[in-house]
Image 1 (cartoon, rainbow, N blue to C red):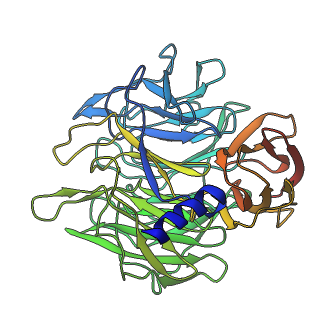
Image 2: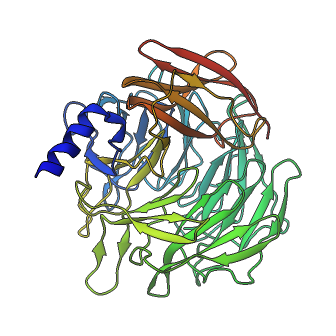
Length: 468
């Protein structure tokens, strides 16, 4: 008992000894929370999450949405004036100032640009747009949106796509020469200069093939199948700075907890470990890259009576190892939900249970060891400081250290050359110590950016350069 009292006293005298823990907290279900839904989209603006569209049942779709502020734990509704028609299984990207939504179960070549600053919609051009379809993929290059693949209501899948320029409100077609075979329920990522698509299915079966698309040359090259993961649809896929990680999915009645790491430079695959990996599942929307680890959560396994999950795992590609995410305080089990990386947190929202009953609940997952900032020393610094980022210039990820001299509220943010805040990396109370933060700028265009540390009594700003 005496040693316990001494330990508690030490924590009171030296608060830096207290380390933040893995934690789930619920998202608000109060005023203005959007109606329950699944198969919706979600984007992160840098300080808020926008969700839009989705389904509440078979053939019942929505064109409503909401803006969630995790700092205030509050919701505001998105306007429906001039909004796109109701839909699910559509795609959405964040441009840095607006959200673009396109396609979906409406099976039209329509979409909209939503400006949260003015709560207003403008239509996406349909001239030269790809054929209307659902279950396609979309990535943001930093200046344009590329959509590819998908399926229409005649169960016809596509290997076509389009590049949308929101500045000119115009489309150009992606080449079909050497493009992967037509498919849907596939995945796509942006490497900083190229798009990689992989997996998916057509009306016959599933794929373990893919392609690398260069939008500058408008050309495709195939990904190797040597040592590639088994064919699958509805898996998850993330870009890990210089490699692509594929995990989970479904094929021929079998759910997977296997995966692979693809190196586009060497066109080679290595397997992900299955030791301590989460239970096999599919969903294709449940994986996030934090800058150092892949985190997966939720999903579905239809074997037997069917099961949805509120479990997940943290995959460290450097160690090729898994650790489970906590279920304490986690949202209820679900799939076809949304997941976004929100600076130093992950936000899960919506989805459905095993009976396809939709949710309007969610959770915020915090784990300082693998998301956002890392406390690399609890020694009390002599003062506050912000170091230069490294590497600099960078593409698309960079890191920097900062020091906190006393318990304080701290905000670390990124602004563009015009001084507009584009990302909030940290906004919370921090103990004294030295921290390392990272920024993944894959969704932002090349240019000069500024990162800033601001506390109650201190602020410092430094410049960094993104080159793609």
